[in-house]
Amino acid sequence: MAVKEKPIWKFKINGQQETSTKSTASARTQKVIIDEPVQRGGTDLGPMPVEYVFMGLSGCTHVISNKLAKANGIEFRDMDIEIEVMMDSHGTRLINPIDIPFPEVDIHITANYDGPREGAMAVVEKLGAHCAVSKMLRESGTRVTEHWILNGEEIAEG
Image 1: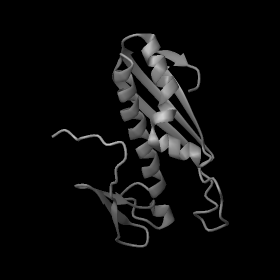
Image 2: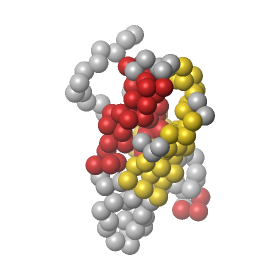
Image 3: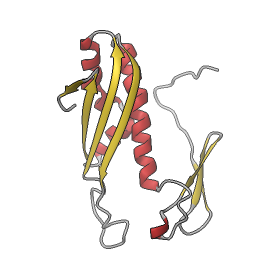
Image 4: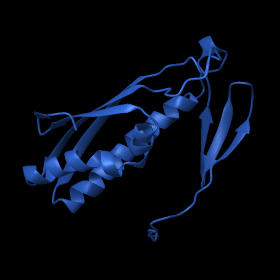
């Protein structure tokens, strides 16, 4: 069933505590476990909350890149995304509140595509302006840098 796209819409996430470190969350019919590593008192049955943010960034990067690709006359055959995050955990460790918990995020995107190089360069140029998770991070003060390798060519930072 096709989803009718609306420019502004709402969605809900529900969450429940299971222990002091483990919770579950659901979106639509999907359910996930959120947990801390064993060394932080958790059971390591799921990613940490902050890891889910960056899993979301990976998914957003992928989906928006493909939408931009289609709009610019190219098609990605494959894509690998690796995200390196620098986190200032002074706030989460209750040391002192901070303004920017993630000062730097580097996204490494390696992809192969079919179509004109200009179309691929348009994706590189426009991704940061259209990925909602990336935009949210940038607006909160995080320096987000995209590093692209397209068809084996290293592209200057996006």
